[in-house]
Amino acid sequence: MIDLRTVALPAALVAVSLLASAAIALRPVPGAPLLAFFTDGAAPLHAVAAGGLPVIEGPFGSVLVRGDDPALAARLAASGAWLVLRADALLGCAVLFFPARG
Image 1 (spheres, rainbow, N blue to C red):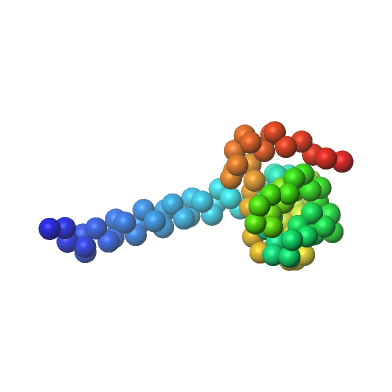
Image 2 (cartoon, one colour):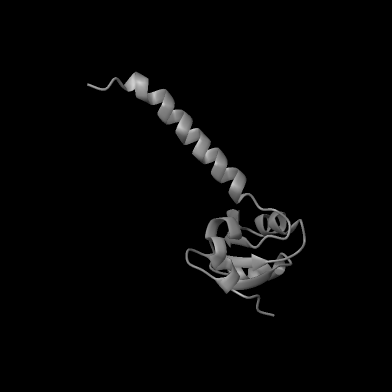
């Protein structure tokens, strides 16, 4: 029989390392496309108000946003985004297929 005490510590270390890696990889960086989630269904309007260029609206109140301003992620959060992630790290090369609309 497996002793849970011998499995718990390695499992906890793996979980912590996976969460830390995800947090580092998905944190917004200046110039990277961002994926912002809003609760009110007006995600593109919030993206424009924050100074970003909405590229495409997604599910769950999300919008893919492009912008060169380093403070864009902070402004998206201030305009009501409950989550702002780095889209190119999350979606990979799929971001390349969504050209900016202007």
